[in-house]
Image 1: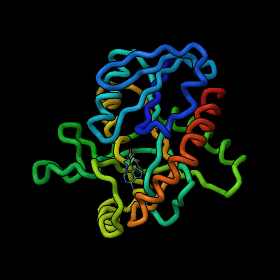
Image 2: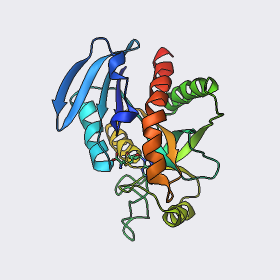
Image 3: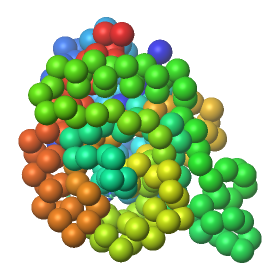
Length: 235
Ligand code: SAH
């Protein structure tokens, strides 16, 4: 296995690179790819930058140029469900591009010519990642929960309760919203690369989202990503 690890923001990946004793860096297409051994796992870590195109470009480059065989996206997201609280962790079973709408040519949310509106993650990789997250959360105070289900991605930071409610109406199973996961999902589906997405909830995608988000990424996001990936790599 050669594992590609993508995050959108530096805060979501802080510390990982320091954990690679033999790190080598290569800059390509405005991104810095760091290859090395991460807790005995051959890995390449990179910041995608924000949004679906940025994430798609990064995922494709990881596969085509850096030869990764598996991809994990780790980052933060807004909650899209009352049962999913700030500090909880969501592992995607599938992802939807919630701003995709080529109707009436294709049903709303369907990625044209794939026949799919919900792109499934790799079951085994997601199971291992969920186990790693569960073990991490067991040792954290505060009673944060792990959820597995549908994550939505779109080129929008959602900080509007009305907009979130409309989205939830169209996609009742939606657990969280972010801006990259479903783009990575499409690339990995098309290139046949197993992938998984894990997100820590930073905000409630409502009017307070921007403030909550900023505070959360600074204080919690990197610690969670680091702890969960360490458990994952140690198996
Ligand atoms: N102002 C921020 C913008 C970050 S965008 C900055 O300057 O850094 C938010 C990032 O966190 C995206 O990468 C997205 O995947 C995730 N995210 C967290 N909460 C979100 C929300 N409510 N809606 C959409 N994306 C969210």
